[in-house]
Length: 334
Image 1 (cartoon, rainbow, N blue to C red):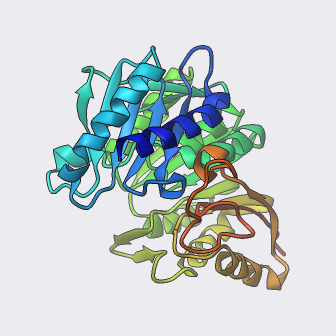
Image 2: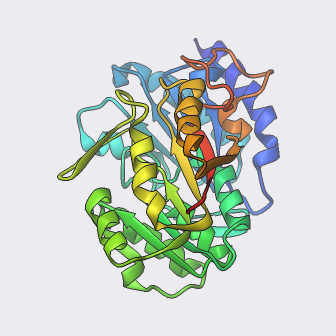
């Protein structure tokens, strides 16, 4: 086991060198075990902090391997200051959210495409910052000048922060969690912007969207990045059971978008094929008021490369290149 694990880490490490920066403030997935040879492991680098995701169903059985992984990267990366492990299937929330096995304090900020993002790596069972949407943040950064932007299911706000850094006129973040939106506020502040509390809406998607409609609010860009499952008093999102559920969200948002405005939509259900999602989007275009402008790819630290891919995704993602399927829609009105 030890020699095989090391070989996998060495192979992917060489390929990932393009993601390093001189300041060591970048963030990327340095090993994606789901497709690169070990489906019990995924390893992210956030600045000088290594984040190991332990996906073994009996998490204790992976501890020896995790120590091996940590030791390998501590030897390969002389700038590492901390290593955190998240045990996904542990019952203890503390173990799920992350424990330090090296160092005592992880990075609290990373830089991506010139944008500063606040991070809290032990706040939740995931990293709190979605690395697989990096190229969407880049697109938003380049396409938000003077736009009014609505960031729904905002989580820690990274997509909206990219819009603000890109020159957006206004960015409204909407999420159920005050805790997560506080991170979005921190990211807003460290980029030199002042906080307008009215731009951070804590609430359920469905009633809050209705409120925006009653206020006749309009936007040039909306972002829809729902979790795989979410349930509120006024509606439920379940991407695993109903891949067309995201279409309902798009239709709820459409009246808020100005003519020729756009919607960026993400479907990250790993068991929804790319073809099924594309067909759902194409059905939206039949009335002539929605068009598919482009698909945004996921970067190679998540897709792997021909040299590193061992196991393909569980279902075909084509025409997208990853199970995180990202589309840009253009909206027309009568």
